[in-house]
Length: 154
Length: 154
DNA sequence: CCGATTCAGTTAACATGTTAATCAACGGGA
DNA sequence: TCCCGTTGATTAACATGTTAACTGAATCGG
Image 1: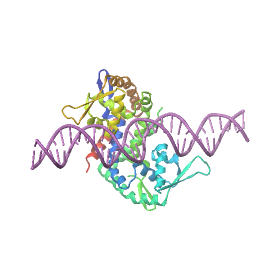
Image 2: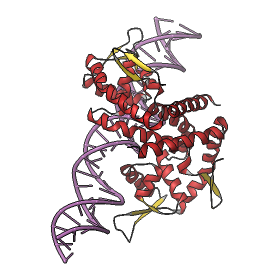
Image 3: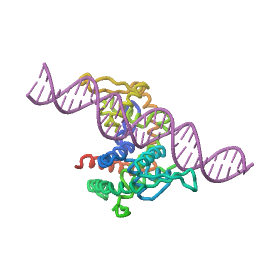
């Protein structure tokens, strides 16, 4: 049972012990470990996510890419523009549906990911060692369950 | 054991099954439930957090406020400016330490929180009902443990 | 008492989050 | 075929995230 705050007749959960705050802080702690690596290679967290997703699945349209990378469409538009200017990705129109934009990594983009991936994997391994793989797997399962439940609930 | 992706001789964890992504998506699912309420009252998520923290503890300096609300100092500067213009908070210099800015809710700010708090609590109760209080408490504990471990680990 | 250093806060610059508006391409129905 | 509602994507406008530079105030050491 969550403790409630009583004050002047109104109550709210303690701010520091709520899902929004703790999910935010947990993510912050995790990302702090990746930030130096990302900065060293001059990419943002979101740019890195987008390229990683593209590495997993050759080409795909912008909508699917946005969903998989968990980036909003307007942000993705800007990110793709930046990555295109840097020569890391290319875009072309879908010939079957002129509305869709197909995105793919360039050889340079693929090379970039391959060169940085080992450092990323090493950092993730560090985190796994600190937390323990079992606890991480448990946490990932619970997060997936939460997402599933909330996305379908009512 | 996390599945790894093998491709052209390099490997990375599946992007959709990593702490950064799942923490982000979980938070997104939770916040989506609060967003309509926040929009209806014309406050951002961060503005709401800042005022809630102030409601918990009368006045405090900007640094502590930023830490408790999990907002960066530059963001807080802008947020305080906005909330001040709307008459929801006031700021004054600490007489004992001229560097510090003390922040407090105005009566209007207190009234605002009190009027909106019930709706916020109702939404949190909805989430608790969907997920189950036990699962939420377990998740909160694990998140706190993760934060504690990562913030101190090497 | 003073100069150097540290500290709290703000400002600047750029990237992303968020919502709304816009635009072109699709696709269904009269 | 033509009209119109829908859809994918971009653009606009504003707020926040993020890092660095900067300002003023406090503190420390000589």
